[in-house]
Length: 609
View (cartoon, helix red, strand yellow):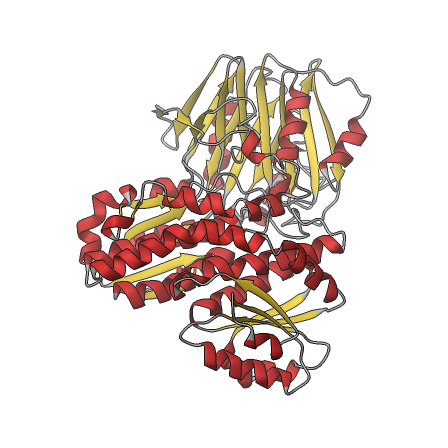
């Protein structure tokens, strides 16, 4: 969602800030702004729309300065406009700040401040922070004023603050919204995630909730809510700037779809032991004995990761014999989840910062359950707060619509199934068969890419459609929902994902010659049932695009278009069946000239509830 970049050091701040904002564009936003300490005053510019609009507004202006803050805003309070864009300031135009998160009690704070004479110029919740700091600063130094302000707010925040009267300092603080401090040779760059930092350094410091850093060109000091100094370790970023570039592709999304064989290989590297039919997951080593006694697993996640969890439910129950429940993280803590010491809660998240998933993990920990994570971003909050877990090692995923992160999650969940199954009743023969088939997946994915132009033609054929029904059974029911989500996300087309057996209980009423269906019809244990569902659609004049197993020529007589995927073990078909659905959505949206990487209203990392 919203993005923060801040810089303090010996270089000119403005180019670094603008570059950082561009690298945060994938998060989703509607406006952008920057404040630079220049010539004894703080110069601020804002613009609605893309970062290029801010660049155009600044173009030709000389704004020298070595300290600055910048922001991309995703509107929560107040519509997208220049007055609501960050940075915001106090009445005296001395204190400027940028903020990620939501201040839940801002209305009460704003009313109190207005009563004592403060004038507000925006509709945002953020502005109250600047005025509250201004009020406290009448009594105490700026650092203490910030602490007192944070003590009075309810909600989440990632903050970067500059004060015209403190020209050599930036104050940054976090509570529920991530901030990373990049250590460079001649200063520091602070950001919401590592994307703006990796160009300059791979040395970073992660702030924890309840911490604030006072940063100068020469050093920094971190303190906590008790005003005690906190010693921080420097971590190393495990991916490079080159990995985050397009490498000649038209869009990051297409590049990331094509990177999936490599992402799956990276997820399995050093973990899949084919000869023994086993998986070795070092991140679970310390909890292996507890996992052996596990009776129930609860998966919490959001969006695409939720669908990965639904696939895992089939895997875990069929092959590891563990009762598995999958829940939307956004609903988990608002119920009264029944957890005990024989239950583990597994969070699946690309960013490791998703607010709802983090809240669910914290609720589980409060109830005494073991917490596990499958996370792509090393050092992220969920990676640090769970008891154990596994990293995807998929590299940066810039496109808002998840692709390679999803298939790497599925790969790790298959490894996890192997790990748990072999702890229990899974035989060596079955373990070896799963391992052998899993090892083949990267090469099988590459075969699907050979049909990319065919998929592009099919997408063009249906480009006039405004509705789709995606259908699948068993392991491919979650993939039907994921396929529908992809085309909704990037093409703004109405689509519904359903289990095939439920089609007769309502959705079939929608079927006519203008409402095409996408059916996942692979040769598996539910193949005949799937064919029956397709025949019901055809009997009502509906068009059908089928995703079928290579060699199944008979299905061509039944449907309108077929996309083939290689044969594999049934539990692994989601790793392959999702790929043509990703490509179909991509070509459908790109063919309409839409901004595939940055779809409207969406954010890559949802860091507010």
